[in-house]
Image (tube, rainbow, N blue to C red):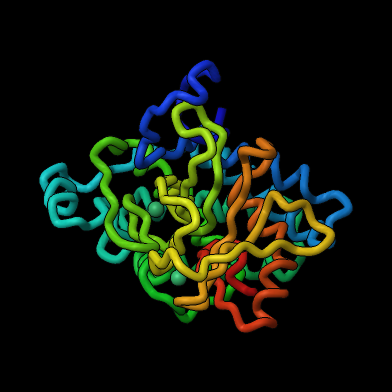
Length: 305
Ligand SMILES: [Zn+2]
Ligand SMILES: [Zn+2]
């Protein structure tokens, strides 16, 4: 059973040739809790332990905030239908306008997280961000969502994106998964974000198939294996592991675009979670960066690397 996802079934139909669903929507009531638990499990004895523990607290705050917000508002049905008809993601982050509930998700996340004991550097960033959100919230949130490199302090941007993860996962959860369609290479069918990582899953109806995960809204979408999820090339795709690490997290490199996205073998270890295990395998990114490979996965919690 995938944690944090809205898919149900038992294990009796493994091996049947059922078609895997194209899109699997997030379940905000369990998505962030599952991440908090995975981050807490990864942190002890890990060289990134303090950062993983920090993110576990952040994911816990996301979980608490997700269940305590007014209902999120989808764009009008006719507008989403037009988007889908034109191959545009219905919640495109490039065009969606921040509303008061989106802003409330960010503000509450920042407030809740600020109540946890934190290093003074982060406490300063949080205090400044809360002041900024009160006076200029829609613009600040819109910039984090739409601009590739907004003029924002990195720690603040991470917190804004954490709040936006809460909001977008709540919006995505209200969509009809069956209505979603592939939009383009390297784009989430719900919000248009690049993939964060891909996962080989062990789900019923989709055993041993691969899904990309969106780092913003948490939607997962089916992609063919041994194909670059960035440019679609099928030649020159290779897999790289990191010596001394379990081979359940690898990088899928592409000779065509010289990019890579991590691939997480949840089918071999059900404890793996794409966002958390992407962060925890930062050593692999560092090795590949030295060799000139470009990271293609977009993970809000690896922004500074
Ligand atoms: Zn998305
Ligand atoms: Zn490629």
